Image (cartoon, rainbow, N blue to C red; front, top):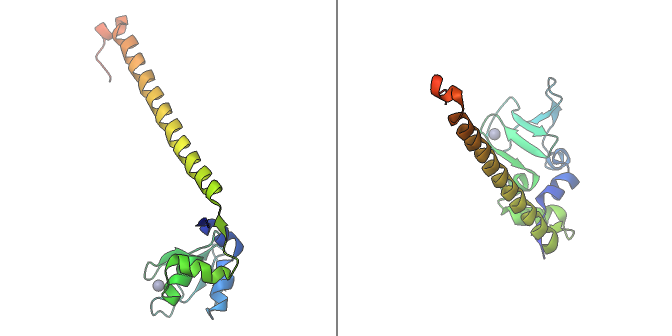
Length: 145
Ligand SMILES: [Zn+2]
């Protein structure tokens, strides 16, 4: 079994439907076209629990923030992974080992590329500095480095 693909769960299960299934009253807050609800984690009279299309919710009252598995976990007192299992029933979305490893490798490759690019920029900077040092201006002008 692979790691749980939370991204896929967020895509597959809209957080709005989950909230409604838990009896939360959703309404539009007008301005940004987002849905808000009374927060299930603190007492309030004006809804500040805001749902975002990307599958996250944020409460501007108590600061709760999370996605649908996290919401389920906190509502039901579960671990995040168990909440994901509960959401998906028997159809848990997991990344296969290979895909998970690939994603990890890609992240490492990206980090490596970035470091190389950074090193390249430093070399450019150093080269420019050396060129400037050997240029006539460097003797006549104040260093602006
Ligand atoms: Zn709250």
